[in-house]
Image 1 (cartoon, helix red, strand yellow):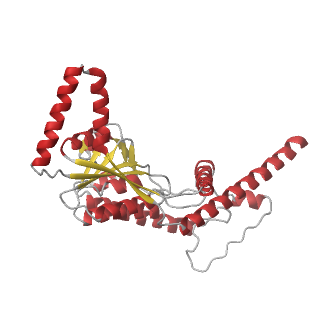
Image 2: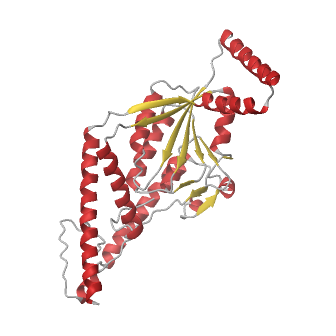
Image 3: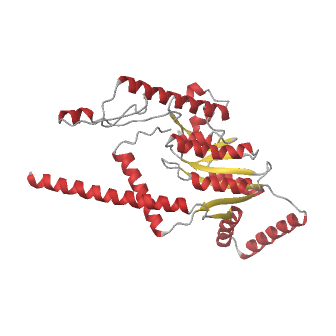
Length: 339
């Protein structure tokens, strides 16, 4: 037994040191990233070329020489005729957002939107391929505000969801003038959640006191170590209800066709059921939608990539690892509110 106690003590110390090192590396990386903001690069790829190369590769393998030559000749003739006629094809700007709990992809999204708004017109279209199960209220609030810029500029915004756009993810999706969802994508979860453990009774059992000093009646409503009061619980619940009401009003503003009280229960629906609830407008994968648009429009994929050193990449990876540990292993001890 003594051996196991010593080993447990050693393991606890080791974990503490490792976590401390990781936190320091993450802090250094974050500080360096803040100092290097604006050092990234906007990458632009024409998706029509991608689809064209896929088709040409398949044709070269399937068609015989005569058929392949005829296809290439017809394509060249069509392109020449369009150029001669001065045909101006619509433009579609394609963005990606893969959301984590902090909506960290917002940093790239804001630059991508700034770039496209410098030349996009109401005749163009923005397509956002969105994947997110939600996260922190303030983080997804900022991400949503970036998409509002597109709506305010009068540029049509289409949001495509292949897997999930729930909670804060749906808060972003609802800004789209049109929402396209895969049949089995997960949508909804219009609610707010916060949870934490409280070890006050355990500490009191071992005669350990925790002093929580505040200035302001509601500076601290619920704590992990201190004694929580009914008044504090009521205040925190009130804050959650207020946040939920703001969430509902936001969604209702951009999706007025919804019965907001019916769908703002925190429930989720698959794409087919979401269509019936009018949470989405059409059932289709993003691949299908973009392939159809590529026939008549020029598609440009935008991605803003920040230049990061090896030290920064290690720090960011460490930060993500710590975040996952805190969220999954410690049940969100930070007491943030989550969409």
